[in-house]
Image (cartoon, rainbow, N blue to C red; front, side, top):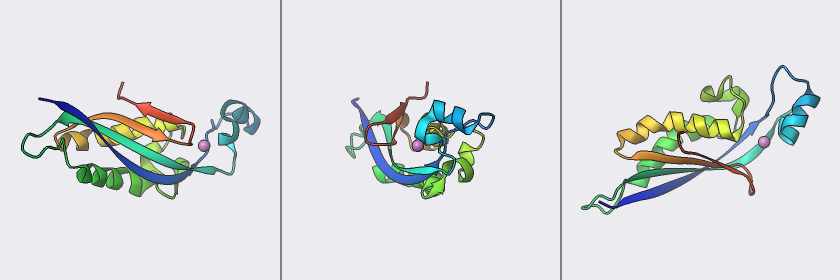
Length: 139
Ligand code: NI
């Protein structure tokens, strides 16, 4: 049966700061650059969630993307949009608020609920700026 990969995009904006508590502001700046600014800064993020599955013969779909969208909104967007990733987001507590870590955290939040819809999570991609994005494939 043909396998297809389908992707839903959702958007959110959020603030963060990349830093390690044990380091000075200057040391953090040397590692993280502008993203370590002590008074936070924000990005308009784009999140792409790709799922994989058989094309249902009768319906012609892998799954209804509305259901994927609903899950992403309930489990992620409602918690992170217009928030501070370091301070406000439960699944990011104790983690460095990098886009890499965000992608892994999103994966962990989504994997089971997406499987419950009968499809497989394939990729979580987060576009942080026009030029930078991160992909996570669960490895
Ligand atoms: Ni940043």
